[in-house]
Image (cartoon, rainbow, N blue to C red; front, side, top):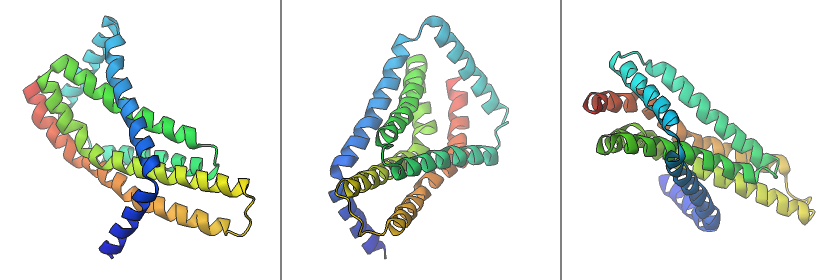
Length: 211
């Protein structure tokens, strides 16, 4: 079964290489834009962010974070994003918005990591490595795969409409599309688990070193 899944994924990757490259490019654009945005903030804005960061570290020290609450919030955020991407694939014209979602996700990562490194130097890099990257090892690849599936579905439906094909079973295609996305959702659920139960441990370990 694992061999079949690997074979199917390799075929999927080979037939959608361009879409994967586009998705990765837009994630990278978002990350770069987020990192660059740090440079254009004025001192007042930076002071506000520093104040928020200090408050956040105090909350960590007080052990006031509920892992279950974090898990629920992370799952909600990721499921909303997945549902939106699924819907955008269905309506065909949603392809540009899928790319915009990737940019926004990348922007948040780039801005967060860029701000931490600018303000805390090597300590900020260490905190980013342990607090930002673990969950995104699963979440970002999951979002990229789902975005490609969504865009592929949109392009296929558009092509069928242009060629006025009526021989395909639309309901069956939508069902396959939905089931495929649900399978990839597992990656984001794993990322949510890391964000709720693993990442806070790393954050608490490094917060004392940073403060």
